[in-house]
Image (cartoon, rainbow, N blue to C red; front, top):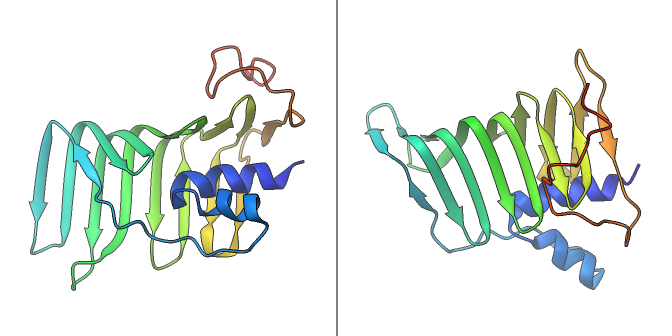
Length: 179
């Protein structure tokens, strides 16, 4: 299986393109945090400074650079010094960056553990390439991902380079995996 496609897909979505630069130049780079703001829109926002969280609900859309996250609910947990501890997106989660798309019911980024976990039937596309399982874990610092099958097996459809025809998330994609 083309592990690099899976790694690149998830890393590009969450790191804003550092891996693309690494693959294009052949030089190892460290993902850099963009100084651009995160723009979040939602129907409601609630903040609790004492408990250290901010909650956005109702058709949430979060945009940073070229990455867009959609969910029904987005909760940001802060440390005592107001740094992000973790981010939890719930309900019809969809992360889009160009032709790259990940969908799941829930996604959680744990800063301290350096892991992004997608739960609830996660699927990741890049063009027509697809991987799905019960849970996806991605460790950006290690450039490592794990897809766990659970009751169903992990499924992947990988097209050799130059043979992809559709767009990310195209309706006909993955019919072989649907039962």
